[in-house]
Image (cartoon, rainbow, N blue to C red; front, side, top):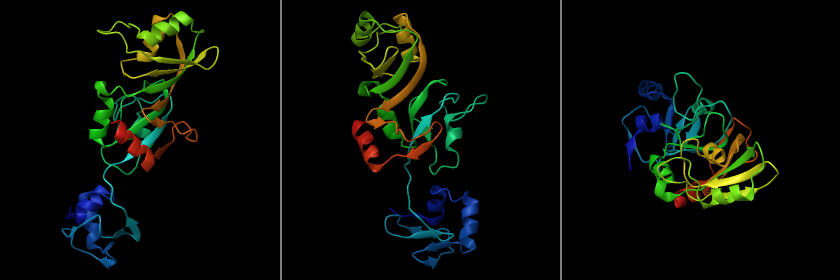
Length: 235
C-alpha cells in the first residue's frame, strides 16, 4: 500500500505536517538514496528506503511497550491533577499510545501500553478471561478457609461473585494471586472480604506477558516480537 511521503514522515513522528513539508523542501529527506523535494510523492513503505537527516527510517504504525509502573502514577492518558503513566513514556515513537487496563495509583508492576486498539480491546474483553498475577503483601497470614473462599469465587458485593482465583503462598505474609477479571480495586476488596488488608501490590504478569526483572520502576522497553505474537494469540 502506497502512502504520501509527508504522511509517512508524520507517522514516524519526524515532526508536524508543516515541519515535515519544510524538511522535505530543504532536501533533508532521501528516497532510495536520492533527495526528494515533493511532499506528495507516493511511496511503498515495504519497498522504498527513506532517510531523514542521514538516518534510515523503518516504517511502523503499531507500537507495544512494557512499563514497570511505580506507585504514584495514575493509569490514564491525561489527568488534570495527577501525573500519569504516560508521563513516564514521553517522546516515544507511536501515536495514540494508551494503557491496556489499569493499575491503581499505589499499585506497581507490569503495565502494557500500545496504540493497537483492536488487540487492547480483545485482551480486556470480559469473555477472554485473561489471567493477571499479582504479588501481594498482606497484613496477616491467610488461613486455609480464606484461600478456599478466594479459589471458589468470593463475593465482594458486586452483581456476581468473582470468578475463581488461584492463590500461591510464597511466604508467611506473601502470596501470588491470579485473577482473570479487572474489577474496581478487586484484589483489595477480595482481601477485605477475608478480613485481611493489602499492604503492597505489584502485578507481575498479564496474560503471557511477564514483568521483565531487569526493568527498574519507572522504566520501560518495547515488547519483543515473540511477546507481541504471544499477546496477539491470546487476544
